[in-house]
Image (tube, rainbow, N blue to C red; front, side):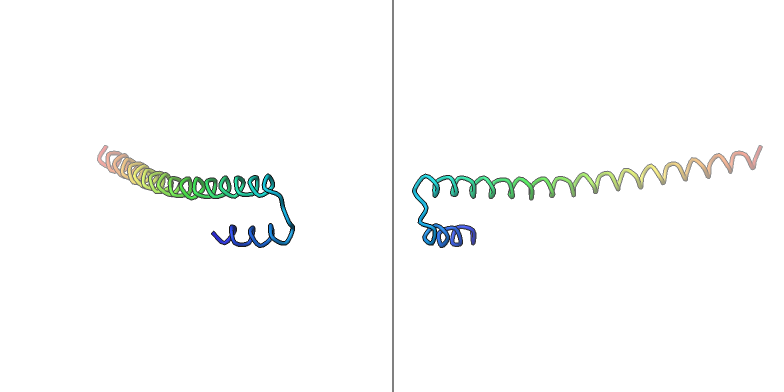
Amino acid sequence: MNYKILEEMRMAELGLDAAQETKITVMQLKIERLEEKQDDLRERLKVVEKWVIGAAAVIAAGVTLVGFLTNISKAYL
């Protein structure tokens, strides 16, 4: 949002023509879309990380339980 104000000031100072102003505006819109996509991907990554951490905890608990059960079964043999 502040990009637009700064760019308008720069354009006025530099005396840019309409084609250059259009290119700058298009690039600004692309940057904004990319920033939105980046935020979306970060949120999706956070969700995946939570699932991976949860799965790792379940696997660790399962391996620990199997280890205890094998030791208990060895003790009674």
